[in-house]
Image (cartoon, rainbow, N blue to C red; front, side):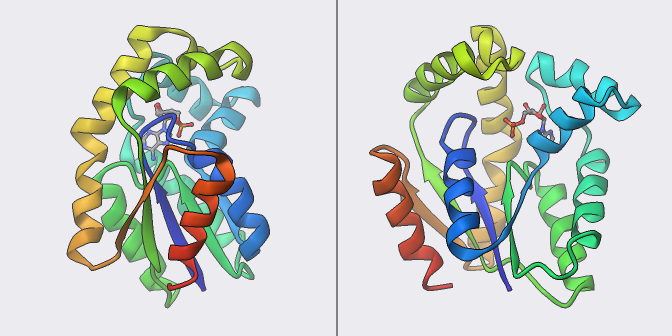
Length: 190
Ligand code: AMP
C-alpha cells in the first residue's frame, strides 16, 4: 500500500495536489476538513458541534477526527492506499493513526510537506475565500487563528515523522504542475 500524509499549513495546496495524486496513484483521499464539511451540510449533530470550532479557526477534538478516519479506513478495505490530507494535525492524532494502520498490518509510507511561508498563505486563503464559500476563509482574524493553531499544534507532527525517517519536504511555491512533479518524485521513491 502507498499511504501518504500530505502535510502543510492551511492554503499550502494540499487539496489541489491530493486530487492529482489520487488519480495518478489510484488512492483514496481522506480529508478530515472535507468530511467535517459534509457533516455540516448534512446537519448532523457532529457537524453542528464541529462548525462552532471550525468557524473560529480552532481544531476540533482529536477523538472526533480519529473516529472519522477509523470509520473511513474500515469502509475502504480494498484501497490501494490513502492520502491523508489535513490529518494528522496533532501528535496524538499521528500516534492514533499509526496504531490504526498497524492494526490493519500497514503503515504510513511517508509524509510529504508543502513548504509555503505565512504571508503567501494569508494571501492565498483570502483569495480562495472569494469563491470557496468557506466562512473560515473569509475572515482575516480566523485565517490568522488557523495559522496559529497550525504553528502551535500541527507543526510538531513533522518531527513525529522525522523521527521515523519518513519526512520529505517539497517547495510549495510554483505552478500546480511543478509542485505536483516534485511530490511525485518523492512518492515514487516510497
Ligand atoms: P481544512 O479543510 O483541512 O482546512 O480544515 C478546516 C477546519 O476543520 C480546521 O480549521 C479545523 O477546525 C477542522 N479540522 C480539519 N481537520 C482536522 C483535524 N485533523 N483535527 C482537528 N480539526 C480539524
